[in-house]
Image (cartoon, rainbow, N blue to C red):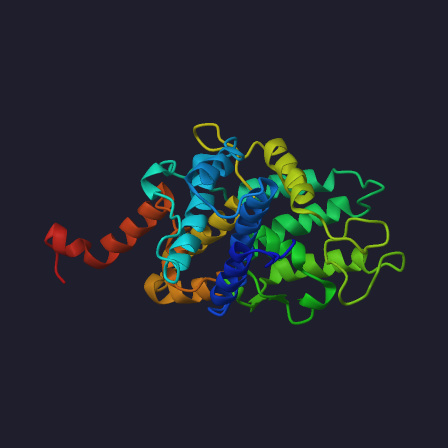
Length: 325
């Protein structure tokens, strides 16, 4: 990504704004992309500054995107303009009431072990290609790690051979969302899958350099999968395995992460574990700043409702039925 060129007063202010934001501990690359796009738009029109007409024209340049994406981009520009207003009181600030109205995000499609088993069987039937000699093994490991470890797609794609410790059964996730790194212990089954994959990945024809990608996409093993390439393969598995919601929607790749969180909650209820005390552990495992972020993934489902009701009845049912305490 091209960093903002401080060749204009507006560019200087953008660079200063990004430096200030990054001092808070995050990289803000998404914010930078939006502001660089705006700067380029202003330069292309030989304008000296941003005003309402330019902002409206810039907003129309991505009118094909969803309302939430358009609103988020406009909101980032407004935040920058509010920052700028501290030292330039007369500068233009977009009116948030004119932004697209936020739309509810699609509910995730939650699936369980049976659906995962079908996907793994279909992954084994895929054929390697010249550009992806380990395609069946890559898809299998991707399903296993996304479902059992709750990784984000980007975290999985950025894993290198040095990040995977098959002996200890641990993955190192480096500077992911919220600018945080963490270690992710794997389940015994997931650890076995990792060792089986590495048995194929570490053949002499593929790169064994520590910084080479875990999920390689070339015959030499030097190039990682792209987000688009991995998503295409996983969507093929989801559709072939007929993993759908009751209203016919197909899962997104991020729904693996939702399913991981919901299955963890359901497992705790069935095991009689203390759910509240386990939530901070889940937040840490998923790389969240707090359990507030984790709560977004914990959807209330019939299976969880039934498990919670059974626990309530076991502990307090006698109070309702009038039995002895």
